Length: 488
Image (cartoon, rainbow, N blue to C red; front, side):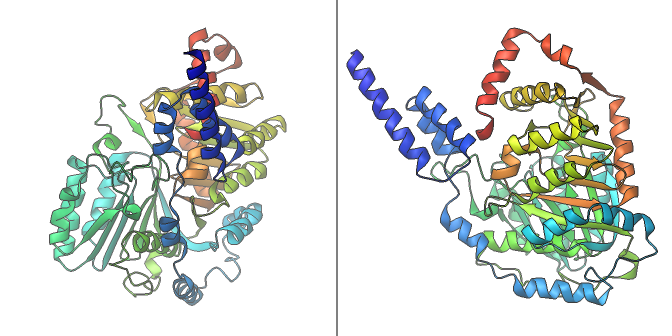
């Protein structure tokens, strides 16, 4: 009997090594999967089949092989017509100039690894309450005349989702070109039937990269975690909110939902639109959006122009550049006085962890705010582990007590900031399709700082002593979660 069990275990270990090592991946993720497959024979392989497989080459090629030359040239021409980004920043925008100067290396980084230009002449409004955000969004959707493109990780078939769908159906009947992309797992429970009225009205909806929740096709990884809206090519939204009642605080489990989202007008909307079109065309090859149609990329109107500078940055498993993670690291490196972060999941890789530790040890006021409650218990234990480790190096850690904190924001000094869909974790850095707006604007940075300070009134600092006084069982769970952090 013992010989049989030993033989099975040896075979399991050999197969585990072959399975994990045959595909290139981060070394920490490699060891984490070897641990799972060897310590949990058979069951580990079932888990791996859902969470460890790479994105198929077919889907990667569908995304990577799109020719973006015409669209990029069209955007460049439009921006040139409105004193765009290849020219000097308006010298009268003194505060914006100072922000761009401090972040010039960040601008260059994204130009090189994400091919995204610095978008000037933007007006940006920050939303932190779902009620305010969705009232404004619904008003903008109702006013659409030409096109609506929507992409959300979560589009629930609940009260809010139905309200927005009704608006989309109405606009589609009026001749507006409507396209909706959703993530099949993130929108679990929302079926194709829900979007049937939109299809019948002439609109279109479908899952990202045609990934439905079938047993053969099911994967936990490589989710479309982006949250974007573009209306008439003039109004854009990007941030952390999804479409669903819980984001309005209607879920008793989470209570008040604290998030951050941006409403944009100006040249940055061109870049949001470009990414939405790329995502749609990769997901619906038989129903392509024309990449240079005027209704999707109209000339920038004077009333839509502002004074804010920003870059729209995307990242995902189709590239090894980890663009948003690199942006986070560069932001932290640029901090001279303070770096304030809000994230629901704090599971940094070694490079991000070291950047935070170096900043704190260099005298930068590094503060990180995370939720006081989990939405994914095992992931939350990993968050607590890394929070306890960062506290040892002088990072101030806060638990947000007034509901659930879902915002993904970074504020550096009084000039730079980031708002988007990407968390501070392995999943957002390497596995998910994400989008962030990196802001070069002192007024916006200061507004986000005030929001952080206001949240501190409903938060509790967790000191080294607090973490040391945790129960042994909780500490044990945190250490176990940490071992599997690269694959959570």
